[in-house]
Length: 268
Figure 1 (cartoon, rainbow, N blue to C red):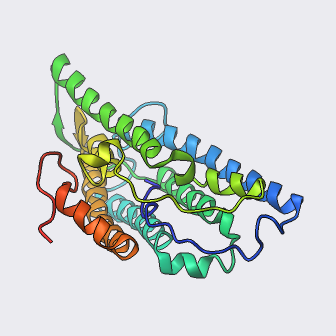
Figure 2: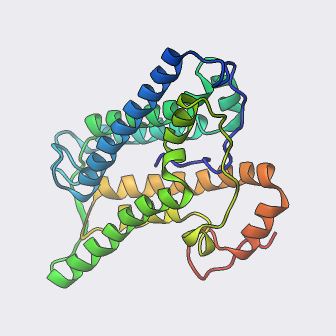
């Protein structure tokens, strides 16, 4: 999911400015950012196979290998681990503490790295649970569900470029640092899909998780828990965005719906 709270990026002055940093330090941080990004690309592609059901040794819809209750407990624990990591490390207060230990230009790359690791742990230990809640038989219905789910994955990818893909995944930060340039957080703007919904990235994830021709119990648990997480994350993220951008973001919330296009924005 990776993108949470990027819009309200905390601007913290590096302890070692780009102009003062040695060539080795700047190149090492750049290499670190590139490795974290390359790792993200692999994890994203694996996640696609894991959810859709191809190319991964274990997917959401694989046959069960253990009893239902222990599998459910393990899966809920894995989802909880990811939610905690993804939310806590995105909070401005954590960032201010964390950058005492991690170089500021590498903070976003470190967030991406830990998100990658949390997802890898989930993929590795995930337990299929059996059972089918729905399964479309007709070719047209299957194609429609695959198309809508695929549109969700595409929306996720396109939204990262609407935000600024390379800033979102830490590459802009480490690249500027390598070139001895100061980093400035991106200004709040209504970009493309952001004129229709405030959180198109989360809309894409919801579509990717829910639109499937076959919904197993494990897939349903995954979709429900990630949906709950998304709506909690939105509340936390928007609270920070209001703190960061004030009346500008309040007006934006009043005009633009949260997730569903053509719905109303918040009333206050």
